[in-house]
Length: 60
Image 1: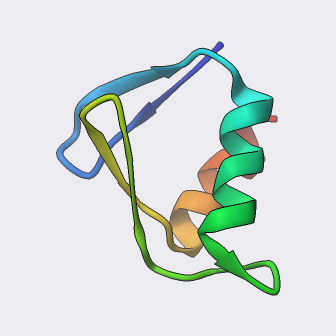
Image 2 (image 1 turned 135 degrees about the horizontal axis):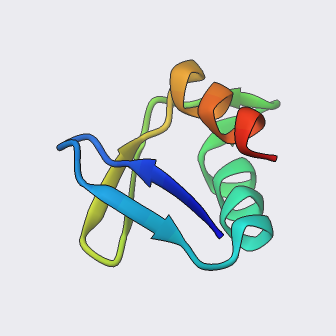
């Protein structure tokens, strides 16, 4: 399990990191580049930009 902060600074614990990253890459990137969309999960909100992708890359 991994913990990340949402856009409001709330800590979110990712239960299934592989599935979470897979979803982000499939639905929130274009040709592998973040699309600056917002991903909502269990009431937590994440802006999918290059900084967020870097956070995910450093978790794995």
